[in-house]
Image (cartoon, rainbow, N blue to C red; front, side, top):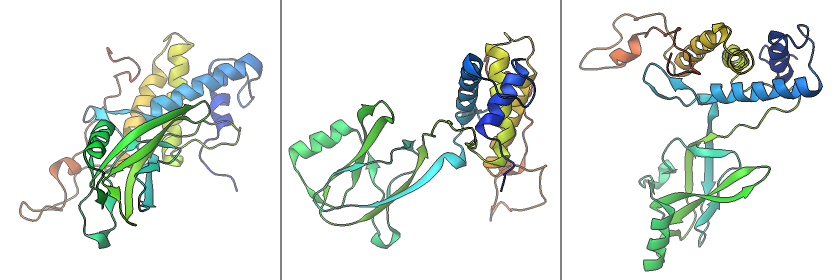
Length: 260
């Protein structure tokens, strides 16, 4: 069963056609294939880590958020984080049945200093994220350090941002699903426009910005056509005023050139 989202070959074929390297729907080969794949990789990176122009802050896509739960082991204070771990999105919390406060994040140096003073055991109250060795295939991996050292079994959980795997097979699907695929395609074409076409036009750069900002609004649950009646009162507020207002998307600013 085929899906409406885009595959890896769809993306680099479209880039190849845009650059005039191959006919539409024809796959590039050799150095042209390498060139188009590099453009797609850069376009994906541009898409995956965007700036939300409404707030001027980095935006975290919901599809990069991964739930992680693990159980502590008595006497063990170092735990491997998932291979695709990038960074934490939420605090580390105990299972609700434990009635314990979430852990506080401190530095690895502080964990070491606490352990040097007293190697306490009990339920952990502090944690640190510590980079481990660099792996040539996996990149940098990470550990979670806890203090005090767990004296028993507790269930801890959090949400973290994944570091997506690079597309490689022709049938690999672009991350984000159908709602994101057009924004990804335009992001790739925007890179081709700036990197290979030397900004002869800015059409794809503008379109990439428009689609990425629209995808952010959709992903954040704020995609709407305007205000929707009286959904709240001052006393019993359900939505904030900001949630009920659609900000115009600036389609003239180039997401690849801050001075425009």
